[in-house]
Length: 376
Ligand code: USQ
Image 1 (cartoon, rainbow, N blue to C red):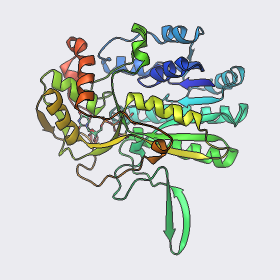
Image 2: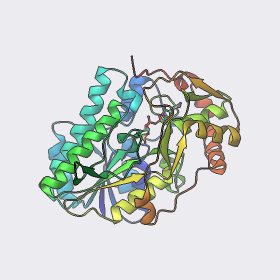
Image 3: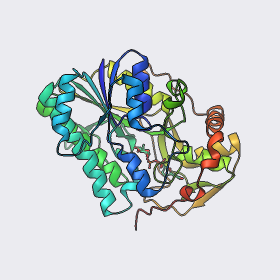
Image 4: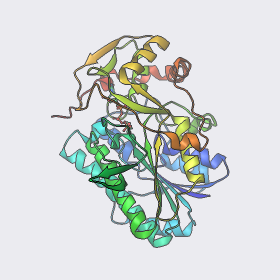
C-alpha cells in the first residue's frame, strides 16, 4: 500500500509509520508539529527527548516529511497534490489536538481544538473526493464520543424501534469535553461524505492507549515514541505508573468508578493494520470500537499499586463526568477479524515501569498535578 500518515510525529503516528514501513509498505509522513508547539506553550515535555520530525522523515522514507497544517487555507491543494502524486490508497488520520484537558483550558483552546480537528478532517475529505473517492480514510476517533450511557455501547450504529417503525442510526453521542465533541463532529461529517460522495471511511473509536514501546521502537535510538505524564497529555495509566515509581500518590479523580476502554499501544498498530487490510466498501462508514479491556480508574490504580507499589489519593475531580456508572461497550469487530490482544496485567505494568525508570530524573512533579478545571 501507499499510505499517507497524517499526524506522523505523534505518540501513535510515529510508531504507526515505523510499523507499516517495516512490513513493506510505502509510507509518507505529514505533521505540522503543533503538538510540540502546544508543549512549549504549556511548558511541558515528554519524559524522554524525541528526535525532530524532519529527522524522522528522512530516517524512514529517504524523502522529506511534509510539514502541513491540515486546517490551514493551503492544506487542501497540498493534500490533493500528495494524494495524486504519490498514488495514495490509504490515509491514516491521527492529525488532531488529542487532549481533553487542553480543550477545556479556555475559550481559545476550545476553538483552536475544534478548528484544527474539524477543519483538518474536512480538508482531507474534500481532497480525497477530488483525487479519488476510492482512497480509504482511516480516521482515529475515540470511545469518548459515546460518553457513559446507561445502555450497552454498540460499534457506531444503533438499531432503534420508535412508534412502531425501525431504523439504523448513528449511536447517540454524549461526549465529555470540547475535544471529544470535535471527534463527534468529524464522525458526522465523514458519515455524510460516505452517503453523499461514496467515500470509504473506517472510523476507529479508540479507547485510552497505554504503553511505552512497540516492536519497532526498539529498532534504533530515533525510533522511540513520546511518553507524557503531565496532566494535559498524559493518559491515566501512564501517569499512575510514573507516580508510583516516584512514590507519589496516584491521582484518582473523584470516587474513581469512571470506567473506560483501554488498549496497549502495540494493539493500536495491529488494529490499524486490520482496518487497512479490510477496507470499508464504497459509501460505507464503518465504525470499529478499538479497545481490548474495560477498567475503572480505581481498578487501574489497584493494579499499579499491587504490581509496583504506591498509595492512592482521591482528588476532587477537576472534570465533569460520572464517577459511578454502567459501562458495557462492544469490541467484537477487531476480535472477529483476528486481533489477539495483549493483556493488561501486573507483568505488563512492571514492563512499562522498567522502560520508564531510566528517565525518572527528568520528571517535573508540578506537571503531575491536576490543574485544568472543567467548570472554570
Ligand atoms: N483520570 C484520573 N486521574 C488522572 C488522570 C485521569 O482519575 O490522573 C481519569 C479521568 O478523570 C477520566 C479517566 O481517568 O475519567 C481517563 O482520563 P485520561 O486523561 O486517561 O483520558 P481522556 O482524557 O479520556 O483522553 C484520552 C486521550 C484521548 C483519547 C481518549 C480515549 O488523551 O486522545 O481520545 O483517551 S477515551 O477516553 O476513550 O475517549
